[in-house]
Structure formats: C-alpha cells, structure tokens
Image (cartoon, rainbow, N blue to C red; front, side, top):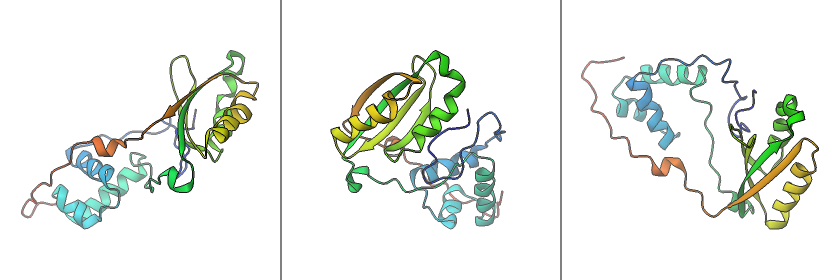
Length: 185
C-alpha cells in the first residue's frame, strides 16, 4: 500500500515499506517538535531555539525532509471558511474478494474533493476517511454515490465531527534551549 494520506500540501506519498528511517537524536526531535507547533518558524529562530548554528539547522531540516521524516509543510485551512461546515470520519470496509484492489480503491477515494485525509487502518475496517462537506445532503451524496455505490465496498459508518482540536494545540510547548557558546553541531 503506497497511499499514506491524500498528500494535501505535501509532496508525493511515500511508502513506509520503502522508506529507511534515520535514527533521530535529541536535536532532530527538538527541531521536529518546534516545526510541528509552527512550521513557519524561520531557520534562524529554529536554530536559536535548538541551540545550533543556522547552517547546521538548515542541513538537518533538509536531511529530515529528504529522508521522509518531514513529509511536507502545508497550510491548515478551516473547511468552514470554504463553506464546508460539516466534517465527518467515515469507516469503510472492503469486500473480502476485493482485497487485491485496495490501492485503486484508496486512490479513487483520495482524489475526491471532499476528502481531507485517508487512512489505511488495521481492524474490522480498511479505511478511515476524513471528509468536509457543505451540508448533510452533500455528505450523504458522497457516502452513497462515491462509497456505497462501489461494488468493492461492503460497509460504511459515518461519524460526525462536532469539533476538531488540532494535536499541536494539545502538545506541550517546547522551551527554548540556551545557545552553547562556540558549539555547532
């Protein structure tokens, strides 16, 4: 399975089977925590918070991107601002006889404009689909016409989202580290 998300705002999806994960040290993890909280942090500010030289920081961020640890940078846009006031998570189960076709099914779903994210999951369901729709009629049309109408799909279950609380808002803030005199990593 090569689909890991819709790739909205990022480069091509990367298969976790192909990707070799680098060993992350404390500095890499701190860079990632800061960028997760604010991906727009300028390199100089990021370097100062981590306590490394700006050139070293730039090299580390580039290596994290090239290795696939950082999958991309994107704007997190409120769907309601675009007139999509209703969000839902839809569990999708595929017919046992269609298991060989999971990737084409995932690609069909991921290409739909309503889809914000697509997750291939373990358990009773095969996919979780995060969607944003204009209203209940548009959500119903997506479920009926794009999911349930497919012969490969055996089951869907829709859960409405009342409120989305981004993970970055719940993460503890990363305190700045004092710069080390003459230390560049």
